Image 1 (cartoon, rainbow, N blue to C red):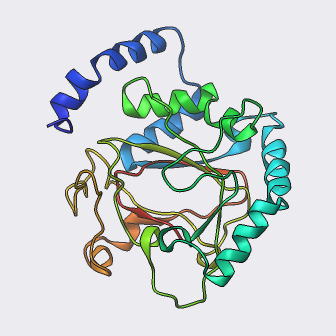
Image 2: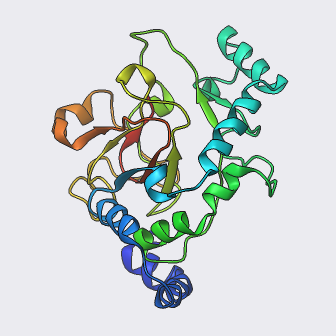
Length: 250
């Protein structure tokens, strides 16, 4: 019952709704944030470039250089080598965890980590809260590199269409630190309007606590191509999305 709309909004998140209401009485979203929030609420996903949301900020340069430094670290190079040899857990062999930890667990919360600063920036939080309608609660962050797979490989795990099981509404924010400009570079993909309140919400709905993985090919048969969005973009592209909707990695 916790995911029934009335229970979720009016009981479990009653305090969080009041906190968010009081917060928004003291501030307003700017034009860029408003545009993102509108797209997000309509489609369950919205894209914007870092330079639009953070005009004049040098934070992306810091994020990029921090990531390149991490790439050269011994633990990352070992994970790359293990991935190439197949010496990894089957559920983790599609991504390289550059900040340590593994799927479902957070890396160490170091205050000077620029990726943590990005996640907790007020501009990010304001858009997340505007979508949720409640004060958002930070859960985790990570920095991943997607492992290369041979062309024509069968999609596995998060490469398949699925819905996350964590909550009725889930905000995830993806930031491309490299160009992702064609299907071969592994873009994030999303079915627009498959989020809470969207047209496709009831197609292969969430099953708590395991999520939902439709049969291979089923989504393509039922969803028009115009609603399946491959998220292309230059480095600095930011994706806001509700991963209770149908999505997959490239």
